[in-house]
Image (cartoon, rainbow, N blue to C red; front, side, top):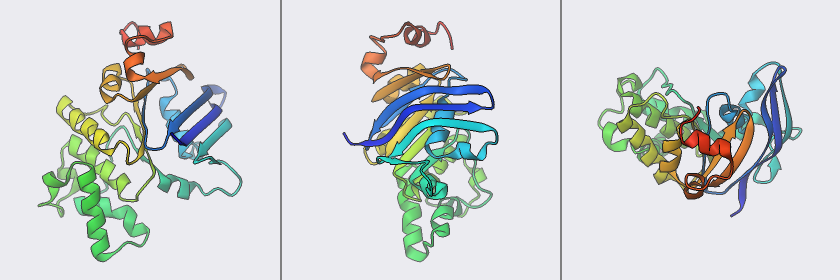
Length: 250
């Protein structure tokens, strides 16, 4: 499988605090990788390095490489905004824009000049891909705040999909959701797998097991191990992984 995302010896500091300690990881085109680990393990920092959101945080330092399709994301002259269009991100808490359901999804495409019938088609396609269309197709003019928390999170996914990214980063997107809404988001991820390269972050080993694919375990800024889910949850190589999965810490 061709590499879509690669990091080589990636290190990151907030001031003098080192958050990432030499992460080398490869994600194939169309692959869904789950990163699990406790709070403070560097999961979110890693995601934010991939689309350069950490550039917006003062007093930070980065070393090592981030490659997207083999190109250095931090090379001289690289456009962070163009990168973020290719590498979309869904955050832990849904943040709907104060406008209608339709306009939430249309916001990004409009910025890129999409209008008229093509815009309506883009909104419908994105909502269908986020498994939300059937629930909102008759009330697209309603406020996005009228949706439940789980629906708002799927709306956030639709908003990312509307600008046609190649990579989707999901930073604990189910952390504030009830079990039924969590299941809907996980089903959405399953439907998107193969069409996009997805990196999904969770602190929940059970969720990582349900999502399947490959799983990477981060702990205290280190990549402890990365393996297919079936192996990770039955034959982990590292004692720290076994302790985390079994609930001894985290």
